[in-house]
Length: 120
Length: 106
Image (cartoon, rainbow over all chains, first blue to last red; front, side):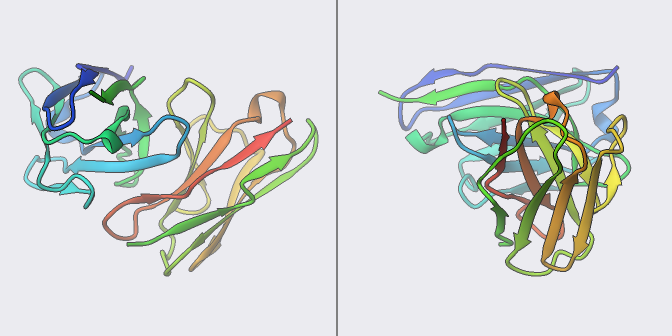
């Protein structure tokens, strides 16, 4: 059974940094395309970043480009999102999502999310 | 960036009725549109991908249609568990984008 478990969220001051994690089970991260999608409180979904199946390519929303880095540790089967220069508008629940093997860039498995709050 | 506009923002219906949710793209996305359902406190769930293909385990009362810039999610017979927020998403070009959502309420 595919499972995704995010962790590492919390309260961080504006300008600060945070790394969130997504532990995957039931499949091999090394051959799977993965993404981060966020949702600000009471708002809609916003795609943040993706990494392709072999890890060679990464993609970012303009709103986080240059500040966030997606990566993975295949030995730990874990996906990461390193966030720097955090702003109040980065406050959101961050979901990791596995892309469908049938059609890339759609998300058929999601974690439960981890809340990142940027506030002084 | 492809902007997806969903309408209406809210749809008030009763169990047993049918729902038609619209998603309009600012530029053509060919076949590459998906629909998700999200209930309060839960992660989204993939319902439809590539405009009309149902994801694994999705009931037949959910169907997708459309092409180019205009897409529709139809729920043919609303069950109590279908009251939720629905989002469309395109994968035709980067950045991936979602619509603002349609809330189907009782």
